[in-house]
Image (tube, rainbow, N blue to C red; front, side, top):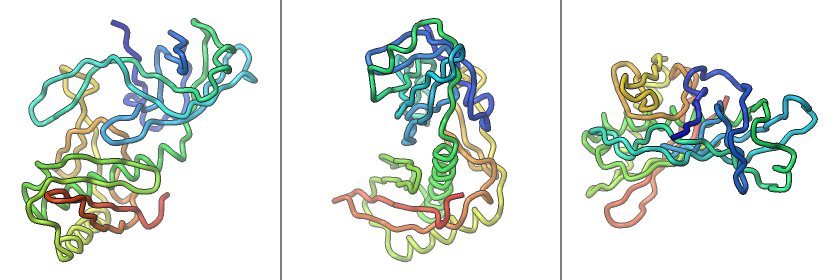
Length: 244
């Protein structure tokens, strides 16, 4: 089974790479390799442009990146993880696909500002998760959702006892202390599955294959608020005071 080589794991600072077109789908391009991160783990997919190498004036924008045909992997404490698969670069104007053909060499370039803000907010999500675990031990075991955007992020929990205002203030304070401490962040993978990855910071480990910054000090301070989603469900919404 074919699989896209995930260059975004090999060089997290890369903004472009060359690739070849493997297949042209109805509204997407499939490449043999890519630096574009596909939607996953609550993080929205990368956007960017694809240029035809033999004629750089021929270019096409992709508005979303999705993983398809990946194989589910059953690992304890790592729900919903998949390995391998192909990555589709979705195009809104399908007529532009006629400019490309299978086998063409292309240069794929991501929107680096968007990626940077995604990485900042995804890192902030893990910092808040960590702070929740310190403030309300065990609650993170009941995480039921998350969404990472360019300007904010959220975490959803199934809880019997709502987060109090004191909880919110404490979680926000702990989060900002972790940010200010400037802890290095390490991303590592399993030996048996390269794309099954973990986020590690000062000994705290979270299963995650998303994109992140390399130190908590790269984040600005964050502001936290809660939203009641109904009986037994709580949402924490947070944003960085200044996206870098």
